[in-house]
Image 1 (cartoon, rainbow, N blue to C red):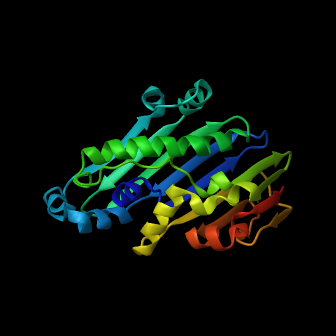
Image 2 (cartoon, rainbow, N blue to C red):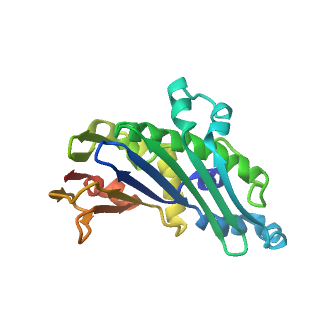
Length: 244
């Protein structure tokens, strides 16, 4: 079962939000799961991976085609998902396994909905891909519902401002989150589990607060980086408040 968790765990993620003055923009989420290739090799897939060392994949997928194949999506979620694009890139020789999802949004509050959708999407698409890859053998098993750091925070917006704050009531149950605990297994094997948040502002920031929030020299970009230890030991490191 641990193998299945690793395959669907987004081990190093980058979420980049590019905002426009009217509150619309683009959400880009990149997941680097290259580390699982080494794990798959150690778990018995080494010979198969050597035989397929020349295999490469670089595919761009319209999520409009995938929306009807993902179970338990509401009609509203399907509408949002159909706007997106997914790129999957795998190069066994170079040990590279990347996914990138791109979603346009018209309102800032759509970002929270997209964050939930990406977990459902990655769960299905990565598992489907693994069935056809040398990493799939021997890694079947039930997987808990995907979750992420973002599930334990509230993201709020107002004109000229963005705030991410810890949902303390929900965070009280984080230690029993089966999915995040599976990522702890990955971290214990030396695999980095981290998240980077990048917010590109439509105009220079007036004020930025947050333990891990870094403002660029031109004041147009805020970057927040955190890892699994931060989430469990000091969750306030993922909080930020931006006024622009």
